[in-house]
Image 1 (cartoon, rainbow, N blue to C red):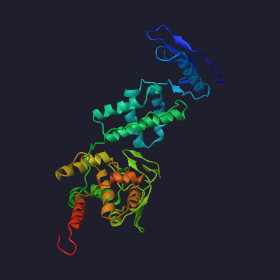
Image 2 (spheres, rainbow, N blue to C red):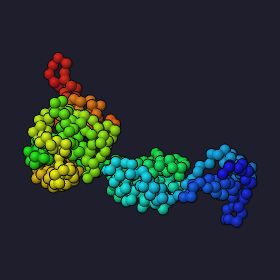
Image 3 (cartoon, rainbow, N blue to C red):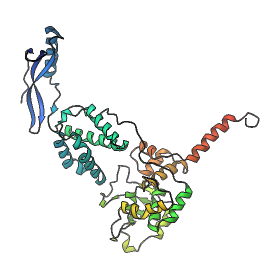
Image 4 (cartoon, one colour):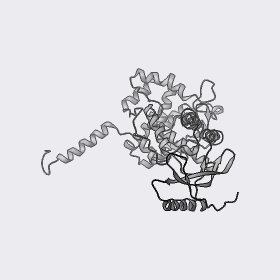
Length: 385
């Protein structure tokens, strides 16, 4: 539809309690049927506040924007319709675990809050108010970050589909104060040894892999015997097994996930468990069916967590990930690895993530503080003050 030059006349609406100046302009709108032109009134100011000359000046400014084609195209489509298309088109392109997370967040949180709203009515204040309510309801900081990210992805997809034109309402939104919902601890060497001595052989091997190599539990369960180079003493991570879903070969959680790590002393643990030649194409860890890997939740619930509670080492949030976090921390403090080396070994997408995983050992920190004060109190050529 060709654009026409608009020269709307200045009008006054007198049938209201407080008369005002306005102009009628034609603006584009996005609806379910596509892009449409719609006639609407733009208020310029109240008659008792501005003069006719000032109203004409404002009219000229509005028409200049309209005729220059700089009018913001607003979407009249309801959020629920865009969200449904996003679920049908974009979500299936994501990883299995991310798909589940997106569907849960959209269904349980975003649709109840924004489903009946038009896309053009969702702005930054409404997003911040939504996240503030979630914080009051006890939703953690990371969960709110995820909700903001999913909402942002939906608006980005709508813009790609030419169904939204404007700023993303999640830009600049404040999440609120970060509060620790689940405790994170570093285990001592004695506690680690106690766990290794108490769990069954399979779970012990899993702990050794997660702690010693820094693998994700999904990467450990996705290992095949063919991924291990016994002569070179290294292991190549090519896939992940996540709760019944075997990811595509060569595609991990992040771009850096597919990597090669050194086995060190663990090569002997793998060699001891090496199966017969005809079984070496299978998985290192198999479930009850004897072919596919087990579910990490079942292992945690039935095999691992009861041992932790018996040892009085369990705390809310203590799971398989704790050993990966221990590896990232010890790799730098005990193994003297640089943050970049720790990032590469863990397969993190950024150094920021590696820093989040790194926990400070209490005793190490205490000794550092003590050394600082020992240096301060040291007397030149004499005893300590």
